[in-house]
Each structure stands twice: as structure tokens, then as C-alpha cells.
Image 1 (cartoon, rainbow, N blue to C red):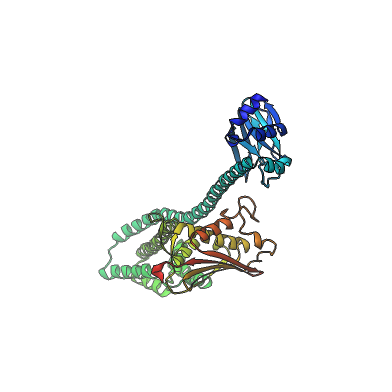
Image 2 (image 1 turned 45 degrees about the vertical axis):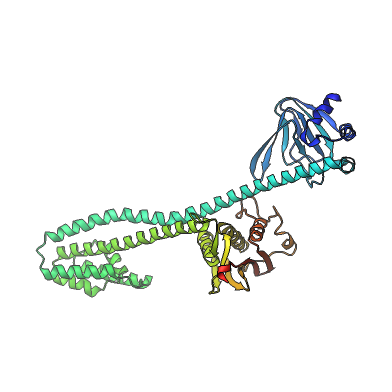
Amino acid sequence: MADTLDLLRRVPTFEGLPDDQINWFLSQSEELHLKPGDFYTRQGDPADRMSVVLEGQLEARGELGGESIVIPMKAGDITGKLPFSRMKLFPLSGRAITESFILRFPAALFPELVQKMPELTQRLVGLMSDRIRETTRFEQQRDRLASLGKLSAGLAHELNNPASAAKRATSQLRAILKRVRDASLELGRRDLTPTQKAEIEKLEASLVQTDGPPLDALAASDLEDQLDSLLRSHGQNDLWQLAADLAKKNFKPESLEQIFAALDADTARAALVRISSSVEIADLLNQIESSTARISDLVGAIKEYTFMDQAPLQNVDIVKTLETTLTILNHKLKHGVTVQRDYQKVPLLVNSFGSELNQVWTNLIDNAIDAMSGKGELRVRAYRDDNCAVVEIADNGPGISPEIEPRIFEPFFTTKGVGEGTGLGLDTVQRIVKKHRGNIQVQSEPGDTRFQVWLPLAESAG
């Protein structure tokens, strides 16, 4: 007992406590000597005891939220259930790494412990607070990584589409440029008059520069058939693709007749191949320009979303942050969600950590999309009310049940499965809003759920 008493006094949480209190604690505790590999608790066991490590090294191991967790412990550490803890089952399994010696105190005696050892109780409550903060920090870090992973996956998909389109267009350009070169060489060998050359160049320029509305599918198909028949009537039986390309540009049969009237068959063929190829090149360049512009816009949106290269605290345009978030979440919106915007045309500037507000909008919009199962109407509204900017995110989903609504802002409360949603949690949303001296409210009924975020306007916006 003397050795055990001496070891217990070395535990920081027990330092300086009266002898009678420590002796009472020892009299109610069970001594447990462990060999390497021995388990002192298993995941899922009832949380019915507190353990004090007196000697040796141990570890707690298991899975939390789909992730493997390993927590090392040494002499002086306290583990297991603590007074006032709501733990029902042990979340991890604990085993000895080296020969170890622990004391196990039954949770059933916690009420008596509180009465007999008030100072120890106070220290244990502080220890539990530290444990909660560490668990919360871990959960938040995991949630942020989960959120980042989901957003990154969506952005990768959004970036891949225009990048793939640009890559396809450049690959097609190589083959078409060869056709243009061959057709130009063929025309160069012909003894064309200045009038003929001018007519070819004029027709080519008019088609390349044409950028009107495309024909509907039926009209384009009819025109293609007419052009193909006309080409065949002039002995050009293998230019069906050329007929399709010219039909896309609403090329009239009369213009085709003029070319065959002005040029011999072989020269007309070379001219048409070059004209058609030039039209294709112009279209492909437009595709490349559009794709690279889309990539540039997305990169810009990412920089805006993260407030990269900007001061962390600044006056932020609320409407701009909403639009940036909608751009970032476009991969979830474009498959069945209609976005209705209603922005009041007044400055809505909030002194803010901008990237944190984007986390709020991301969570609320993502939740709304999920509530509608990816199909429905998302309503995004921003307006001024007195000295506040008000942002409303609404959806026409089934609504939040009355049983759940009072709990939605509780830490770690979720109705989603593991790996679903952004993982940020409405408790995080609420903390960010409060950090900005604002508040968040929710109103929900079937077909109309609205989250309203109130944020004080910056002085410059007054």
C-alpha cells in the first residue's frame, strides 16, 4: 500500500491532496497489474470506471467517425470515465505496451467522490474540459478536411470538363491544319484570277465571322441533305462531312452553286475544303477560348473563396461571397437545382474574416441542396435591415421535422451518414456567425425552409 500511495502522490492530479482523502480513494480502487498486450478495457464496454496510470506505457486504439485513432498514455495520466461525464460506452480499446500498473475507481462512487474529495473533483472536471476541447478540435479538423475533400472533388470535376474540352479541340486542330495546308497548296497550283481569289476569301471570311444563332436540329439536317445532294451532283461524292460543317454555319445552296459556276470541279473542291476547315478552326478556337476562360474563372473563384493573397480581416462584399460560393458549388447545383437570386442593390459590406463567411454559405447551401435531394429551387437573398446585412438561404425541400429543429445547432448533431455533407456542422456555422457579432435563425415548414444570418454592417457601409 505504501508503494501504491507513493506512486499515486506522483500523479499531477493528486498532488497536494490530504492523506485521508488519498487513502479513501485507494481503499475504493482496484489495483491492476498488466503485462504487454493485456487489455484493461475494450471498445463498447460499459463506461463504469476511471483509471489512473501509475506505471508503464499504454495506448487506447480504435475507430471514431471512420478514422483510426491511437492515443498513447503514460504514468500520471488519467483515462476512462470522469465525474459528470455522459459517456455510456468506452469508445476505444485500451491495452498495455509495457508492464504497467493502474488503479481503477468505480464510476458508481463518483457521487461520494464529489463529497469526500471536492478538490480532486474540481481538477477532474478541468481534465474533462481539456479532453472535450481536444476532442472538439479533432472533430473540427476532421470536418474541415472532409469539407475540403468534397469541395476539391467537385472543383476537380468542374476543372476537368473545360480542360478536357480544350485538349480535344487542340488535338482536332492538328488534323484540320493539315487539311488547310493541303487545300491551300492545291489552290496555289491553280491559275486563279484575282476575282476568283477574292471571291473565295470573301466567302471564307463571311463564314468564319458568322456567329448567329444555330439552326434547330431539323432545319440543319434538311440543309445538310440539300448541300450533300448538290455536292454529289457536281461529282463530289465523299464530302458529306463538309456538307455537315457548312450546314452548321447556315451555308446557302445558292452560294455553293456560285462556287461551282465560278471554278472547275477540282478547284472548287479545294476551295470548299479550305473554307470548311477554316470554319472548323474558328469553332475550335472559340471552344478553347471558352474552356480556358472557364478554368480562369474557377481559379479566380477559388482565390476569392479562400481570400488568397488578401488580408484576413477586411470589409467583405456579402453578395460577392455568395456568388463565389455558388460558383464553387456549381457541380452540385447544375444537375437539377434552380437558383433564384434576390440581392438588394445597396452596399452590403461586413467587417469579416471572409473565408469563414464562405464556410457559412457553403454549409447552408450544401444542406439546402441535400434537403432537396439535389433537385428543387434554391433561393438566395441578401438585403439590408437597419444596421445589419441579412442573408437568407431557402429551399423548397420537405422541411426540418419539429423533433429535430431544436437540436440542429448542437455540437456533433447530424442526420447525415458518415462522409455525407460538408461536415462543417451547424454548430460551426453558429460559432462563426457569433464570432462576427451576428446571429442565425431558422424557420421551417414543408416546402419552405429558411436560414437567416444577421451580420452587423461595416461602418463604411452605413
